[in-house]
Image (cartoon, rainbow, N blue to C red; front, side, top):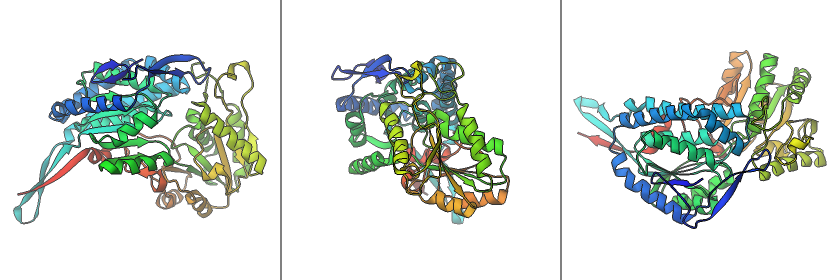
Length: 474
């Protein structure tokens, strides 16, 4: 496959490519251009050239193109979902839901296009002011491999509806879905150069996007460590920066909960996408009065999960996306055993069978009696391992939940609305779910506090991040 610059399929300036493999069996899927700084410069120049015309198109007309693009994506959802499953590893049903989610994001921003108009502001003494909103210019986006379609939508939707143009770098392991989605948008009538996709490693492609002075705004999703480096490098050219840097989301289960719903919520919240989701339930806090029963039901439910190739019928959890993540999870669980930091009550190993030997598979794992200083609860664990901590009450649960550098998502499971209100007020996170976890509709702003990031994506709240605002007094 080739990358997209100025609306055309193109090779890397170097002519080099790299291979994209299926994480379920290691088979070669395709090749992608091994882009570098020169390719980013070409893309930025293309986006800059397209900006003058695209920024003058009315928001309503930009919205019409996004609506049409969403329909193109829905028409091709099965083909796109197959590509996503084969390069990312997730079950086909999850992949199809994600493709539909991308379309929903475009439809949301197309739907609010009529509201993106300048207007008069009444002032004191019969006077008026006005607020002019103008596109920032060329924007950059760097996205990860875990939910590449959804996160691409978070960047593309608001950037384009506000009249900006965009240079986007996919993750090296999942470029095919992003390129296919971009192509569908061009089929819908997106003008040349408005959206450019440059594939390649972060050390060359990503670094140039961060540093290139033509690119005036950057949205990055990734690790805390990389996000800090991005923020420091972007400051040299005074870029506006939005950072979504992951988390270690707590899930609190109270003693008045609907047990079956909470168990299913924990399974979905942790093992959806093989646990490779920023907002996954990564730490489970359960009240001691129901702990034995809850953990017993959870263990039985987890052991029924069908692990396999995402394209196989009935698969509920696919492989991890890459060897580095697989090795990290294996190392963490082995460390818990070696240091006696917890009890592995199910999973904790690679599944047995010929069908698993060439993929990055790891059994869904539960660990109880986790030590407070274990890396399982101190770091972001990006994989199918759920540490369980028993607490005596809500106060202890919230205190333990907040004892982290992260603050992305959180959830409380209770039928007591006073408990829910307390949790919503006291949990240090950008979002708190009540009796659910993970769901993120495009209408709701999303982002974190503390080390989990800067700024918000989704909703009307992200729109001003893509505008230059000018106040007019008259």
